[in-house]
Length: 184
Image 1 (cartoon, rainbow, N blue to C red):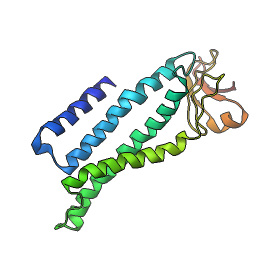
Image 2: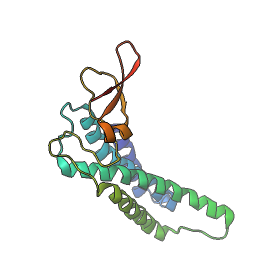
Image 3: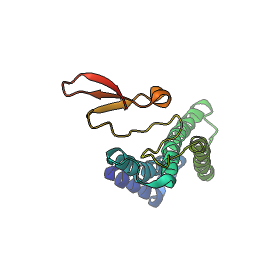
């Protein structure tokens, strides 16, 4: 996480400061780095704290919504930025005398990517809740990783379709190394 923050911040700093680096592709690479910084600064620490906190989600419902908004936003920004980076060489090859994205349009392209990503992420967040008496921060059909019962160390994953219909189904490794299942 620290390496990701330092490396990506350094990359953005170099792109902004060095005039020779001012082109659309480098601005898009900088946007990709900013998306990684947002992921490293917001999503990773809170998700790790949630996974390792024995009492579950302790950050309140506002942060629950925020995390479930930021996680897809950073992924969407990364995907759309990579797709935009790929379009530029395609246009150069197919239409060698035309340039699709001018330097002046680069700012608008990056802004559009963030707005589109935010709009797409809002759909999932609008249905989310944090149950008042629960230690879970969960959205409908979203993933969460509550700690397994103490009798089942080595949790692998939770079977979500069963968990939503019949209670939580846990898959775990027993001390003998065999895979088992239990209902919580």
